[in-house]
Image (cartoon, one colour):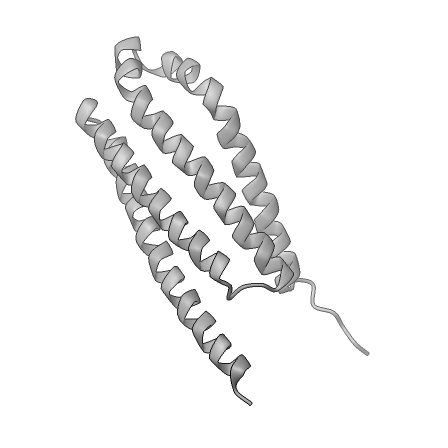
Length: 150
């Protein structure tokens, strides 16, 4: 009797893709709604000062989600250790650092603890993506070496 596992790598990748699409949809929906929502919570002077860094972070966040989506689609296809994925993971790390920088600018123009927290999270994400990129790149090199070995 052959039982198939309920959860496998293919389903996990598909779930990750679905969640990434949902996050991307929500992030894109936030673009026109960000200022009106902030105006409900904060005073207009705060919103004027903080909107630029928040929009910059949102743009880089959307870019990061698009890159992540491309990586996940390649993983589902079985194309994990590729030059394209290494490049995408490097770009993902840069997006994390750009979000961190936008949050630092946000803190400078409008000192709030939320900007510091977001900057720390984004910086850690950028660092984590660099480590993952290095691991994938090393594995890619080992795979290429093994492919050429007779």
